[in-house]
Length: 222
Ligand code: E4P
Image (cartoon, rainbow, N blue to C red; front, side, top):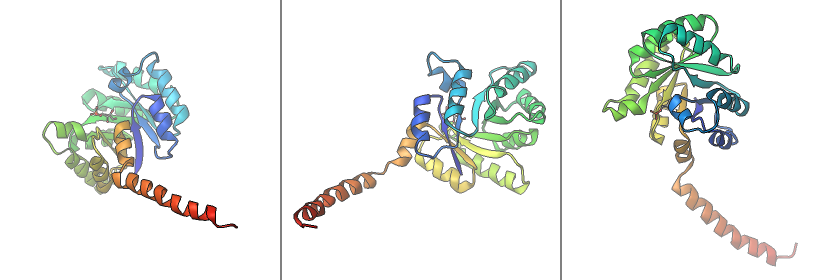
């Protein structure tokens, strides 16, 4: 499974990239709105310089012509850019056209296995299922991942399932168990995945115990 970072914050991306665990980044207009003094284009190019993998940037146009123009512009920012398009009728139509031009599409705001199937059939490369927002609405978000994985496997659809809107470490484990090819992870969640209190306790204990034999070694002449 590949792990992406779900942020437009370059400091977070630089920090996590050093750990060798992320192979892509997802952004959206909400994440970008938190960043000051930088254009969306410049930030995406900056991210592409740090992470050598797919970096998703989202279209906001709502009509077909606008969407096609915006998607082509975004795709030209960098070779690694994947264009995010929301799944609706216009989005599917745009995806059908753009995917034939070789532009990679991340079909976003997917909330059902039907939408996932349509996105994959229209030619999306990535299909982003928003697990946490479904959970927030009282539905079982992971069920949509399960159904979509089953359908994509059954028909050998080349699109990859990207588990998005992940809120806690169990979400990542469940998405991995179900066979989602990618999980995109917010910075805070990534930090929570790294941590375990028993690791901290264990490090403290090993450190304290190492002092004992270091003292002994200092007493014994070599
Ligand atoms: C992923 O591509 C989305 O931008 C993101 O995961 C949305 O998450 P949210 O529901 O926490 O905003």
